[in-house]
Image 1 (tube, rainbow, N blue to C red):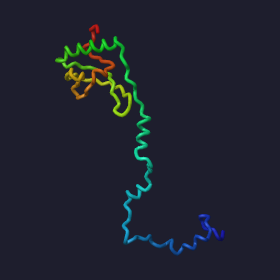
Image 2 (cartoon, rainbow, N blue to C red):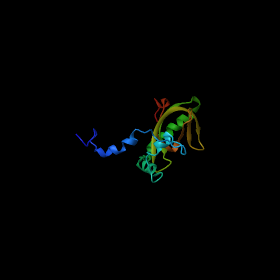
Image 3 (tube, rainbow, N blue to C red):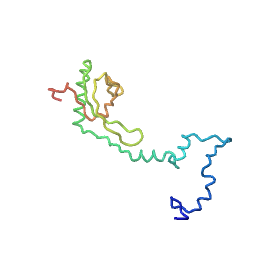
Image 4 (cartoon, rainbow, N blue to C red):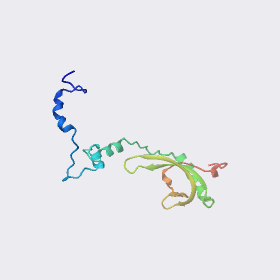
Length: 152
């Protein structure tokens, strides 16, 4: 078929035949852009710096702290008293406690287990051997092998 090349383009393209086979021009005055900088040209553009982070933070869910009733608080207090009495035995515990969120209202519940290193009565905290610090006021539940067979 006359007038159309193999790509379906008209013969008008042929007017560039004289430069199509020439080597790529390299400037002596301006250095080539590094590949990393070339890739940066196609990186996403955020018109509002930090806006994406703000949206992610807003979408992140937190839990409300559960308020224990008087009976639940009394059980935890009795269990803590027993653990304090036996703290020289370095009792093993498993606790579920509330961790307040630093950025917004609410927080998350975590369950950890470990061996009690000591009680900090002044700050009302439990320090475990692995360095975990648990606020007594944030306890939801506490279990230990010491509680087996004891009416608490």
